Length: 193
Image 1: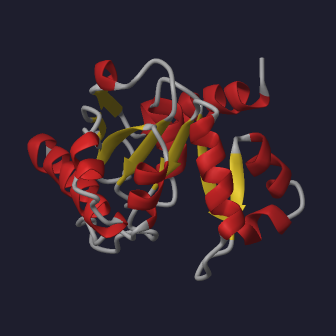
Image 2 (image 1 turned 30 degrees about the horizontal axis):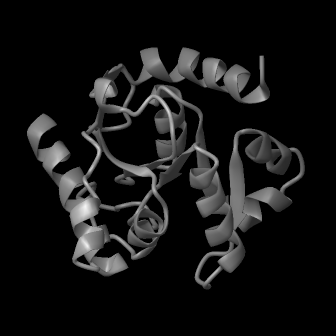
């Protein structure tokens, strides 16, 4: 058993009954190959919830400061996270994200870049479009819906992969692709709220 699968089972054992997590759309999740998993961001626990509900291990970018905290930094690294310098064009983290996808793994991304204070979906940053256009990965939208309150239902909805061929054919910009991804996440939220 890897550290990731051990940590996943521990977190799932606490979170799934506490937040009454309901998961749907897993049938759309590609069983193999690179996946860019794009999710709305409403709470600090979102990476944990995505990690325990996705059918495959997920790699996340995490703020560089977390890796400098004794013990925590090691745990974060063992849970498939890699550092990103926030507020700067961090080429190293961009390369690391592309490598995750090229190696056929799942890269989890919160296109908004920060948590929504209102719970409403915000504007996505161009990073999601960058990864979608620069890789051959399937782009899967995901919506986290509901409050993080004990014994209230929290829904995690995985959507159908977004067809990127047309966006590449018309030479869409990273911003346009991110807008498309965010609109698909928004549709999932509205359909399942």
